[in-house]
Image 1 (cartoon, rainbow, N blue to C red):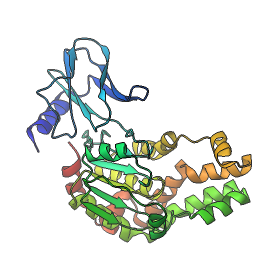
Image 2 (tube, rainbow, N blue to C red):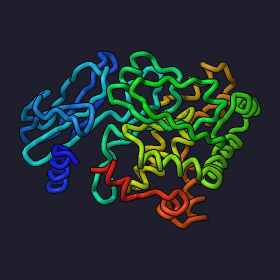
Image 3 (tube, rainbow, N blue to C red):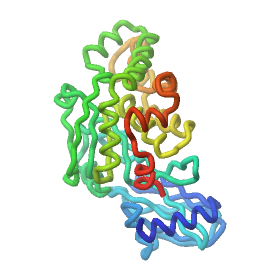
Length: 338
């Protein structure tokens, strides 16, 4: 562990969280906004990784309980550190500011049950990457994104070609068929207008992912453990196959179940769909639009089905991870927590 990471760990563990830092996007001005809450003299510095925080260059400093700093244009990936004489807090953007994929997000910053924290800038989840702009690709190259794991089927990959930044050296394809809702299948479900059946389909998919796709998730964890990070994993919408992968990964790292569920449901916030939007965009009747909205979003019961299937067959998520998927939890924590 490098010196800066070690110093952050020692200060956070010894003092606890007496300050807060929040990073938001100023979309109108294409900048990041950093919101500071501290009762002590503070300073802010930044970098593109936990290892490269530029402690020698202050963005701002001051003595004020609450302050707001407008940072430089957000065309590059940035993490921010708020430091006082007793504590260092690191924060980044949960949702990355990409034009071509609204559901690309950082899994960093989540606190574990043993008071450690998932490192920012190493683990990302997303939907398909076929619509990324040149600016998006440049942004991802500044992370720099190195490894991607794609859960999409061959058909999905052919229909929507992945665009990758030049920094990606390792592209791993682990096709999972459940969760692959073909256009024809979606159209038939939507035209039937049966929202109960649509929701049940997604519940059933989450059961199938646990029972029938262990080889893919086992290989996924092998990549997370062994491959060079930063690493991103995705499917088409970034919600079912990817949502389960994220839930299992956060669980392995020791994040509590409530936080895992909240991360799972963030898809709905970031894809930002409503019944009216779906009706207008696809020119559908209300009943049909409601079905499509169900298929394009997530519900707590979907993840709950996956977890109950694990409990019925393995007792606990940890047993499923270590016995069925052969996850090395100790290795994962040493690599991705501070």
